[in-house]
Length: 464
RNA sequence: GGCCACGUGGCGGAGUGGUUACGCGCCGGUCUGCAAAACCGUUUACUCGGGUUCGAGUCCCGACGUGGCCUCCA
Image (cartoon, rainbow, N blue to C red):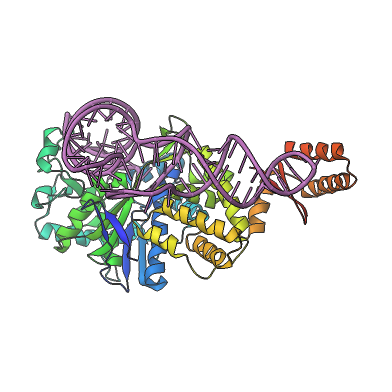
């Protein structure tokens, strides 16, 4: 079975052929660490984690390189640092903000069942030329100037968009059309309104690095051009991110990387995930429906968020709802019960086939339901495949006992008390005192306990 | 204003020319003292209007709706 991926650049789904099957290379734009990640940020992290896992399955774990950067230089970070640590020197305050936020990000995504990427470079480590000779931003900018694709003006270094014949190919924008309805203020020093900053000057109270163009800091896009080249080379296989990054971020990355390196392409497949809404509305702080990953994790296990995200295809918009979370939780309760701590040795073909069709995770979920039903009716081969598939995808990370305990603890229910009531009810039933046994049953139901009678006795669990 | 994505049954959500998606819910059955749980089964769909075709949810045109980008927001 062959992997097919949808490419934003060509707008088509086509067979994935890696440049080097022994080193499949993927770059995904990571977080800007100025504030805790929200559930919208979680989507690309989960989606591309699934792709990472699939590629490792197909090509071998040691044959995939996944790079996801951390952006730790950004004016929003500066603002946050000044706000939160007014007494500290700016550099120190910035470090506190970025370290704290990055640490929280790592905790959050680990809870979502995401593997760490192979490399997670920080932008600030790639501003100046490096001792190890890996690509850096200043050298890239110098190359762009040398090749006639960038110019210095008004204290800035700008990319000259007109120097690139096919600028705008990814987002389907043509420069002249952009100009027609442009609301972008034309800076006097720009040759063209679409030109964007590669390097800008820093004032004394802003973070800065000494460069050939004075003390300054990089523009937003150049960091990804540098870090992808540093770890993946000038041309690599897959570049991913959210839909909103297509323009201007990825468009400008392509322009910088291709023009600096003189290559016809930057990445062979551009993949973009759709946006997330909350209860049918745009997520925004003013509507009060803005949730960080951390906040949602307080109420739900990470795997519930993960499954909830994968129930929708990555390119479609997703509506994040409480009802959806409840359904996902219910499904996972059932899957943990059926998988019953099976180790799992062989991943199901149906699951790999679904994922191989441009990461069709809804189809994958359907395949898992099929395996689940087969396993529940006693097919041990499918139970093995069910568990192996779930583990491949980042589920079943805890024992089924731990999974159930968590729910019980969260509910604050005293297990010994329940066991006692169950024993009383069993005794009442044995003496055919059904009035009493039904009274206890109603009592338990009111407490949120689901009882399960079987030939072997009575078990119970906490209802959601 | 320009560009892009999406619009499927009570709900979520796959499916790109011709056969059941799948899950939840509802309803029926088995089981049960009666239930619950579990298992088995059933049910309803393709925003609207044109067009292409032997045949369209699936292709084309238009309308409407929702969301996004064009302002360093995943």
